[in-house]
Amino acid sequence: MVDERGRVRAELKVLPADPELNMPDGTVGYPETVLLRLVSSRGAPHVKLSASEDGGGMVLGGEGGYVQILSRGGHPFVKIHDASGRERE
Image (cartoon, rainbow, N blue to C red; front, side):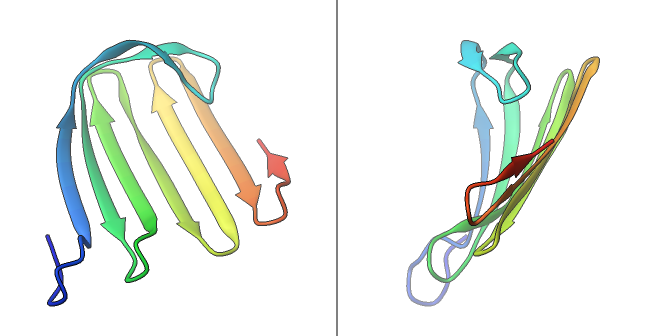
């Protein structure tokens, strides 16, 4: 989806599986995934929602940092990353 100025503001993609991807929760590999991105007027993806065979994930971000929530198989994971670079799980 693009806005009146031709900038991408929303994307819906089906991403192929990647068996070698290192995930933030420490697992390796990722199944085929449907990804929805909502993008700010400045081009920053502030909302990402994903769904795959073994679970889903969400990232909410902004100028102050981001929050990431993953629930894949038996590995639920929450991470908070603020603008100063501090990270909490």
